[in-house]
Length: 443
Image (cartoon, rainbow, N blue to C red):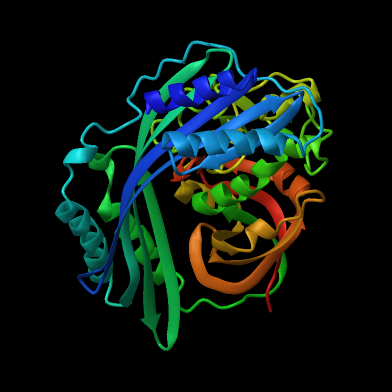
């Protein structure tokens, strides 16, 4: 792959392209689905793609190809140069050579190539079996899955900055259905690890089965204003959605809820959020971003105060801010824009059981529908929820068919406690969080 990069760079220089970068990704992976103890699907994938950004007379051209032959690369370069003719002149910069940060763990599992497909199937089958044996009310597993991926990134630009690194990821997921007295409820769990040996099928099975069983008999309750706990996975999803407001690209486009709030209080002092590329379990851990800027840990929200926007090179230049190592490509075929590495909500001291006992009454939200419909500019939201209602720390009734509405600004400032029960969802990690009061609509 290094030779492919060299070929592309030589071709660009021969055509007098002074500013350019080359981004190449080689990846492969396996996905397994098991149902009723039998293999439903096995899918293997192997992909390679190369992307080129070229600046011609101050205009940026972009092209990519999955044909990495010499002819395929030559055509991609010609396309990038031609595409530059249709863009506006601007000031573009590329990263300079810089030292990669030191990781205290490897980014890739060295055992990746040695894991037999039979073992991967066994893990998915074990998750399904454990779910079905957890409780007689669990009647079906809709899907039990295993997946893995190994990806290698290669980068080079006209400032003679180059790097390469390899990462691995392994995951388990399951969707279960529980039934009782004519009622049916769904439970789901997902686990992602960097190292195969750290996958825990027991934990995944128990979380999914318990999530389905605990909602049996759920119904709407009377509308009220009440303290609410967003369980860790739900708050992680919420933070993932809100992360768009922290991105330099969206600030530049006036599409951020937090655009004018840098240095101001946007949340309760109980809340701190960090963009951290050095997390062992985070799928976004990497030494460089996709533009070649060295990554680093930085506070996004610290004790309620908005400390940093997350920027790529272009948004940083336009906003007059430092580049934070957050230039990300959603795929080889996409231009870099600002994104997160790993977004981590700092944990508190209380476990979920202690958190539930804090207020007299509390609704624990275990599932939320429509989080991604939150208005990214006004912050207004209305989302469907399911969960469990508690009084004096005791479980009263499971609830479903309800909505919680409000404004993100009020929700963040209403946080009174942050739990200790961290949960990873891909590259977002959060504990459960207690909000002082929200309007919950039901009967």
